[in-house]
Amino acid sequence: MRLTRAGEYAVRCVLYLADRGPGPVISRKQIAQEMDIPPHFLSKIAQQLAREGIIEIVQGARGGFRLIVAPEEVTLLQVVEAVIGEIFLNDCVMRADACHRSYGCSVHTIWDEARSQLRGFLREATFAKLLMDKSCITTGEIAEEYVPPAKKASA
Image (cartoon, rainbow, N blue to C red; front, top):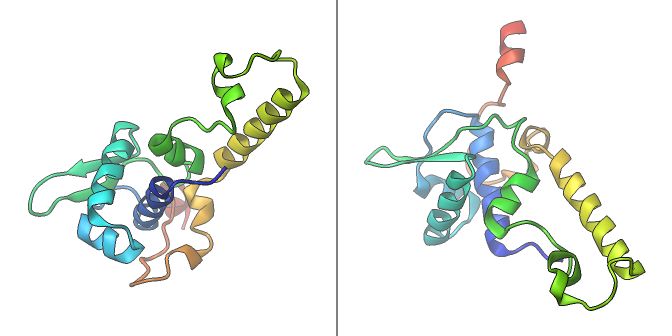
């Protein structure tokens, strides 16, 4: 399995927005430049992320995109599947009519287990965890570290 370009760009977009935390509107142009995403591709990806309730698209002169889910609540799995659909490693796991062998087939069982493990691993990877290492946001100025609301109150 290889992540599509759309999936990679979606991760970059959400990573950039997560670095700023939920709330601020960031221009499409800024995200595209800083995260090396073609602007026309970013618009398409943003629509898919907005449909899944991860970001909001704000129209107008001061428009752009806004993260509407806290970075600790959005996962790599949600972002990737918002753009590419549910992850399947092969056709026999995805569609019953793709293979005439039994679902008890040992190969089918391995594919299904690998899929479950991959999805579980991506589900555990929140954007808050990813932001602990700033190496993915290497261009431009890095915003102040996002501090979840609960930690701000105790600081």
